Image 1 (cartoon, rainbow, N blue to C red):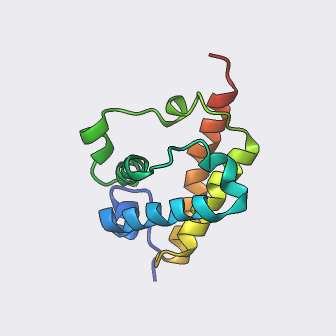
Image 2: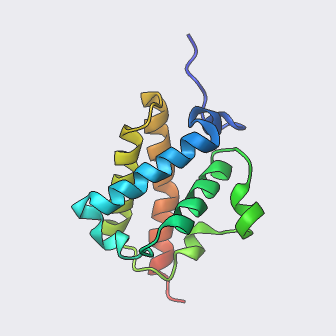
Length: 137
C-alpha cells in the first residue's frame, strides 16, 4: 500500500479537509493559544478579537497547503516572515507557536503521518519568522 504524498499539488489541502478542515485547525490553534500557559506571550501579540486573525490564518493556510489562494484574493500578497518582523519572536515564541499548532493538530481527524508532516513543514516558516525578527530594520 502506498503512503499518501503530501506537499504536491493540492494533496495537503485535501488531507486537511479543505477550507472547513483548515478552519477547524485554526480555531483549535487559537483555542490552544488562549489556554496554554506557554502561549501567554504570543497571545499578547495578537488582538483581543481574533476574528480577522483567524480568517487570515485560515486563508493563508489554504493556499500554503496547495489549495485556493484565498488570502491573496481578500488581503493581497503576503510575505510571512516580513509581516512578522516587527514582533519580538525568539526561540520561546517560535516554540510556543509550534506547541499551539501541535495541540491543534492532535485534535484533528488527520492521519498521523499528515499531522507529523504538517508540524515539520510549519516549523520552517516559524523559524523564518524568528530569523526575520532578529534582523535590524
